[in-house]
Length: 125
Image (cartoon, rainbow, N blue to C red; front, top):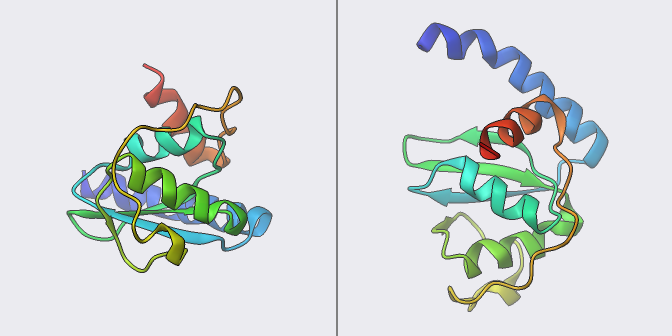
């Protein structure tokens, strides 16, 4: 398994680099104790583009979103009860508590890059 992850490391980094060239560095959302797929699926339903997923440690993950969508993405994650970690993107989201979600967008965000397509394929099963 470790060899497979090492073999995929370069293509995943290249995919992240290409996404950042297209959408900018954006902002990083970090969370704990939850896999990446549910967070990506949530944000995608609300039209947020996600790219450059990372495993920071065994329990902490992150994803990048375009800077213009960072405040909205952080709000959605906090509202959905995702255990966020790291610095706040927007101070106005400090007091957001888990609760009812806003109505989903009719058009989800399109996958970004190869990794985005893989997440889309496995999250629709």
